[in-house]
Length: 333
Image (cartoon, rainbow, N blue to C red):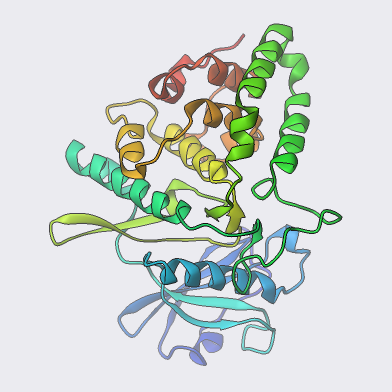
């Protein structure tokens, strides 16, 4: 693990929490676990390269806003203990201090549980995501200090989550990178899928909905209480937006498939049951074909096999969730 650009020491933390034990758990973003007074807390500093190496309090406000909006709609979120939007603090950098979520990450729970409980935890995540996506807004864009008050400036950068046109432009660029490897028949099949789903893709942006934006399965935490499983919250809201929920399905499906495949648990069935609204399988397929290859290869031992072209062909051949999740079907052309 690379050294963080900011070193958090017990002396720093002493001004926030006494008698603390500090453990670095991640870099970019730099995140520390703090054990103090019988509780666990996390300090997060937004230091990823795309922030330009500069402190940006807007990103802190962004995460705080997302959690506040979820709380206002009755969804559980982490307790935010302290924030700083400026460098005027012991760390010399904007930060967010939260109390640890109760429970265990979804992906860590599933292997420990029997079939019935494993299905239930995935179902509850579907319920939670469905409630998030039920929150609607008037305009697309990042959630900073509240919902967007106007459409994004067309002269400035826009996220594919916000606008169908931006999403399509990104998808076309992504397909262009691999068109020679796919060959004409596969490109024709891809064009046919685009034509069939273009109206549905546009419709997914209207109205703009609360979307996580970087919806990894390991960010959902659950606890068993009063005889049932409950989601206690979801982490990492720095991309939270008003936009199309398709992006959340893509990250979630991609990671769950990499980790669990078709296996002994058809995880998509309880997930879709909990979501309780129609999820367009072919639209998910279309989105997955446009995902950059890094999304498939960054999952360590849970990465998808094959080249980018192999994966696109597998997605286009799949006609059911079961076929899509069966990664043994991926084979070289």
